[in-house]
Image (cartoon, rainbow, N blue to C red; front, side):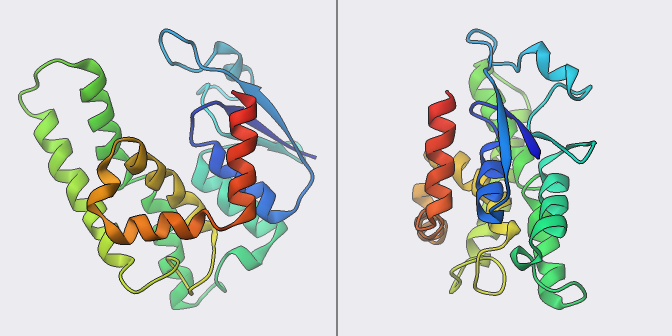
Length: 204
């Protein structure tokens, strides 16, 4: 059985959604952030040295990193959530799959850290603003005329990018991007997306 080590209010929610879409048997071991520091509890280091989530255990393997987890689960349990390997669509799919945890996430995290710190910066705030606008505008433009990111159907790329959409919604930036707003509404039409949100809410 697959075990998902899930941290509340984290990127792990999209792995719950993926597991639901895959229709596999799995269990969730929940962890709660420290109420003061908002950091993950030290118990997560017993699973993986980084002490971060998501992490899954499956068939004796411990797998960290959302992109790696997504690729592994889809390749192992349901190839229908990815385009056919060797096609142009598969190349596009891989780019979006990894864009979520590379180019897209960094400036958004920097903006969150700057806002949380509250101190005046000489460089970081303006850099984060410029880079965030760059990557999110690219995302917005790429959704023009599209329902999903690749092949006009739900794939692992959409599940990965759902966390970026959630950040934009939570920080209020999404109002400036109509295509992303429309995309968010489309993702929310999936029953398993709604179920993942309900599961995460129940877990804290």
